[in-house]
Image 1 (spheres, rainbow, N blue to C red):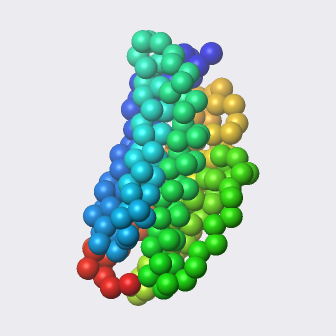
Image 2 (cartoon, rainbow, N blue to C red):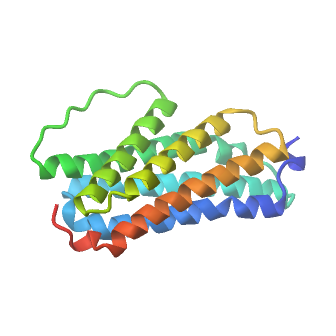
Image 3 (cartoon, rainbow, N blue to C red):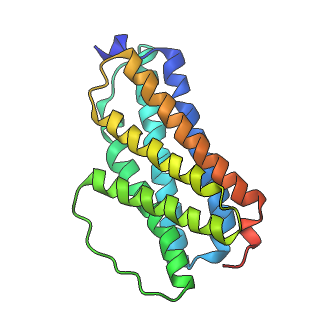
Amino acid sequence: MQETVFTVPMALTDFIPVFLFGISAVLLIRDLRSKMAAGVFACLNLGVCLGFLAGFLKALYKLLIAVGIGEFPLLNTLFLPLQSLGLLLTGLSIVLMLALRRKAALAMAPLTLGFISMMVIGLGAMCAGLSVLAVKMKKKGLIAVFLFCFFCYMAMGYLASREGNSTAMNWIEQGVNSLGQLLLLWGVLSLHKAGLRDFKL
């Protein structure tokens, strides 16, 4: 039963990657605001908010079980659709920003492959877009950071798709998630310190 799987320290640890993502999101919003059209910037805001909400609700779900208040399955069920859509919108907003700056047409094929496909596309777009920014800002070393971040997210998606019926698997899942968010924060913070807000695309 899940009441024996989740502990209070584990549940509180699950909030760490959530807030790491939140910090990365705030930095991106501040630095990219002047570089995006209103619609694209709204897409970025909605994406990061949905991504943060997804992680927060799942961490809250575990905490409520751990402290004995009860289980609220909806909080857990919302995680995949919210995170998938959030990461998709975040990634697409960055790609659109780069594409529109180059005045290139961006072909947008309908995405009907489900939530997992959306997550892969969104993550790939986000990490690729941030890698392009890193190259433009002569921070090529950050490509490896965003690449490893992408792999951590993929591993997280795989682990989340399995039955989380053991304490060990839940700790592994949280460790991979935290590592991915730390890598994202490292990359975004590095771009921020390098002057992303004032950088001319």
